[in-house]
Length: 273
Image (cartoon, rainbow, N blue to C red; front, top):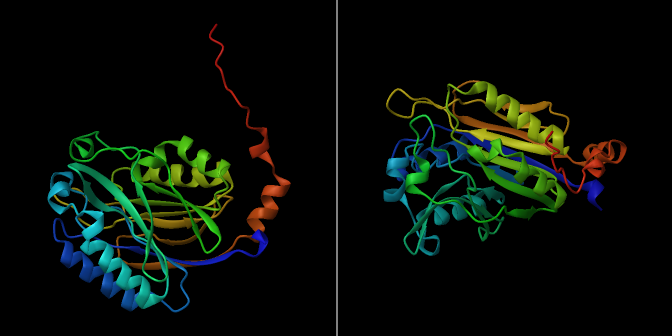
């Protein structure tokens, strides 16, 4: 059964306008109308696309998940395109607590999963951890039979979460990001490594364009296969969708031949001499 899994994925790279949710809604709507073709199974959006990468604006943009304009907007897109949506992330609020949260909606526009970022980036002048809290658990969702592990940006630096997804049966990883222009090598290496070490496809999607205060997003988004090969990408800063129709059969065949996951030890206790 698993050998017949296929997924037609489109990911949207875009430049958010800081603090202007409705302008960003309009950008996504226009890019969907321009670039998304028929028969797409999954649309992926980048991190904090509703507000842009500006943590000081996070809380003022926050929405309660039970009364969310962003969820309503994504639901309309899902129904319009008859597709699943991994909605990047937006800031959610619950009982005075704030989170950087990725929603997943099905073809009927129903919210089926929420993942809140497990690791918060608060280095080199960034202060995400001052404005949002960490999520409690990894979340894996079944999208058309494809078990998909959700992560957000800085999560990519923690291979443990991806290994946990792989052990739980993941076929696909999604990392929605707003990755800085001055860190191209870590983005290139770590997204590729997470795919190779787990023999799993990954959608590595980041925002593009100017942020504020002379900061820019990297804007090099890719879909990477289980061997680390890039199968679709946008190399530059432009806004738009890039796509791949993935047949998971070769991945399963490769896993059956190269069973390195079976060689993982239960414990790696370090002997200190």
